[in-house]
Image (tube, rainbow, N blue to C red; front, side, top):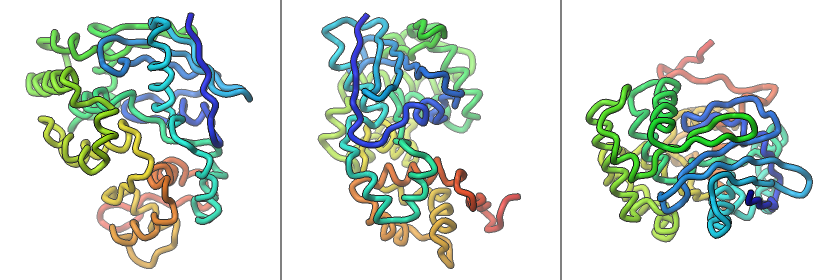
Length: 304
């Protein structure tokens, strides 16, 4: 069985990644192993990976891949955990901005976990659009078990989503309308042409990536930004148009009025070159502070 080790360049907690509910992924309690099952970059095959952490780093055991694929598997896992970036300066952000520092203390080692790939993020965007995330996560699981590949990882079964070629074989499936399947097939075809390759998207940059993703049928501005920030892995893109995030900034920074887009960008200047990471930290860890802000309703009052 192939193995690899990733050595973080800054504070990192595998537990935080494993317990981070995101993209339809359940936030299960960490039992010492983080289990991954995904389409390998290039989208031709799937692999399963067991991850464990000790003082020497994050150690992966690969199921289903071959030795020649090991460097690509390791690189993709590092990207998914945000360990492909140099995190050595992230602690400095907390020293410059005391609010970020408090959040780093409250959630030590929390880095943004990403979708396995832009292909899988785009597919989830289509599957989950205008439907409850928990319900559609179950549909995705059933689809993956029926048409993808299932791995036995540290005593648990976990299925990887179908490759684009496998997805194109799906003609109908419970829980997916004909329109959703048509859009999923469009995503699959684009993936096979290289449109959703991470290297290409990183090369063209975040703005061009967001514009490019909106050309995919069924992907609007919100999901295009989701793919850009939480699948390609740009670490310094400030999500200034997220109302809930700006609500949290309003409360954490004790602003007298609701935070505007311009104010958010001004505050976020102190977070360079980790503006994405700081924003995710605010969303994920604000509730851990002793004086945690309460959500603000869209009518302007506080929810109780």
